[in-house]
Length: 324
Image (cartoon, rainbow, N blue to C red; front, side, top):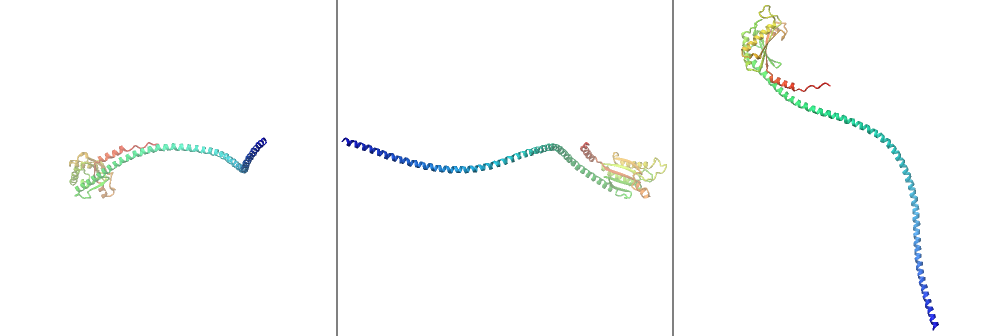
């Protein structure tokens, strides 16, 4: 029985060892397979790393070439930049000089512009003043034109009335005409006086009375009586007369007196002797001498309104600019 028991124990131990060995072998196989798998994995990774290394080496070579190329380009750009910077400094200096010139020119032009603006303002003010003055002058010119038209109408009306009143007299002895804006009534010596006389004949008195009748109605008409002679000296010893001047003056005075006694206010009548000094023809023929022996009654409408306008224009005219 003992031997039997020992043998069974050994058997069990042996079985246990065999099982343990089998388990160890299985474990070792498992470890071997795991190690083999790890080795394969490591081998694959190594191969991948070698490919990566090769690629990196290639990339490094390309990168180096690119770097060197980039470095060369950088150096070229740097040199170009340095040159450009130097050129820019010179250009900047030139531009600065040009700018200073432009700034000075601009300042000068601004000063000139200021002067021009000041002058423009002065000119505008002067133009405004002149425009206002021109407007006033135009108004006065209109007023003056109207006054002249009225004056011309008055003169024409006066001539028409005088001509109508003296229509019955011979045109060779009496003429009515317009001259220089006045009415001239020219009466021959034959109509008024005997040779060398200062007394008006009856026919002459008739003409003067008709003229006085018209002048009484024309209250704004001034009358100038001018006596004229030819160049033949008066006869020696003629009472009260020294020469033709005396004769013409006394005849003018006589006619002026007749006009005033016929109703023309004396303050409107002026008598003057002109002698032989204002002839209308040469004193070379009897006919021409007869033309020069005449009395001219000059009728002038009073021009107070016209003169007032002219005085206003004169007083309101701008003063002449001072000499520079």
